Length: 261
Image: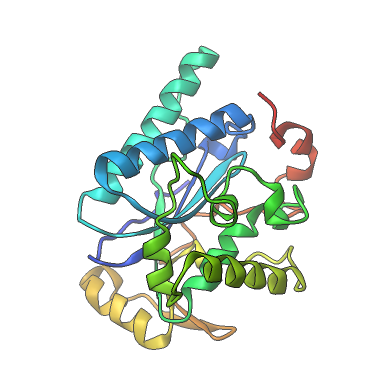
């Protein structure tokens, strides 16, 4: 498996994906998914990680964040991934890698495309066939946006509202529900790998800007258009972490990935 590529351009919104080693279902138990979220909260508290959305599945995670400083995201990911793996291996008396090497980060255009990425993350377990609606999956940002927590919340509601151009939380919840409802009417099993296998996704001008900002490292990369979206393509398909209902036998594990302890 080739290493997932990572790049840093200040001030961007990033869609981060990270999967378990060899796509194993190491996050199949609710207790481990809760611990991942605990360390996400700790990253927010310790480093100021700005979280816009997330979901923890049985074998990978999605995280949508806004960059607030050069070291915030890598330090946060090191904490979350490292502590989650350490706790799991200690509990299971296990040795070996927990994560599939590096996480992958895709720069997301916030001008008209952020909502699409937000809903793409929300729909992950619907595409997998594990639930019929995002509300059915506990370990997700969808739950936090629709049912805000009094304590230990990780979603930065203010940052999310400002990026989406929404004035208050009630409006955010209403718009969010509407986006998901519209998406559910489409073919939910269709996976769109451009959201997690690209260097950047958005308008043609945005992805061109990202390509130029990356300089030599992206010089030979192609800009592609797909269904009104543009992306800077990776040199190769270096990372795949979403699974639809037909992939990797996920439906065979439905009895494992529900809220077991």
